[in-house]
Length: 356
Image (cartoon, rainbow, N blue to C red):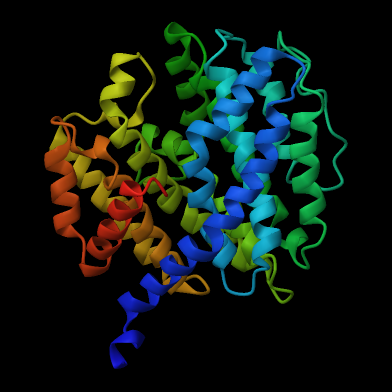
């Protein structure tokens, strides 16, 4: 009985609640948006909306861990997280899958990601420069759902500025990385170079990777349930998540997609590392700094569980055993402690059951 109170088991119980309590709620919320997506007037937009939910539901499952953040109303949190992540995945499909390479159109679409975090914002015409427009109000409804949810939070005004900063970084990433091959890299460098001096421990492409995560926004949202939250706490969350936890999240995502992206000529930030040992070293650095920085936050055990869960979730994907990267996967797992190995085993079981 005493073993139930040791730290690894505490976090495993968190994951158990995550799977048994949160996953069914996520599925229910996704089904609601899936039904709407299937009814979009423009068949091309409808296809991208439904496909983004079908193929990227695991993003929503992962992000919904913040529904278990201490003090959070889980049902309300899931509603916000699923709407915001579904919007992110839908827009990603729009800039990646319909043979459009228009910087102005991509930037206008991604105003939705920013305005969703500003409850008082008047919603823009997101499709103004995009060739396909008739979505039956789907994107606006996603934005409105987020805005309505944020109005209920006692301390959202405390963290709004930090959340919008992260959304702007994300929007710039999505605008530039999906441009034509011959121009996307230069556009990204021109965007990143003025900012990178503030982050001397990371590379240009690691900065770019960190901008691609929504986890920082979800953590700030969860923290805003605390009526006593202070501005300095919000700043500390943003500084811990960006670049470290957000960077780890997206680098792991690109790590397992390395072969696929190279074959399809997609931009992959892990491909900028010179050799496999450098991949291992840099991922290890992001793990170490994520855990170190998380100790300074409220509820550090929760954030440690997030970091360990990211490692377990991504490395349990079959793609992590691709012949070109499996040695790095094994080293990363070998460097991890008992808790990560236990979570890795659990994720493998969930994948066998197609629950992840």
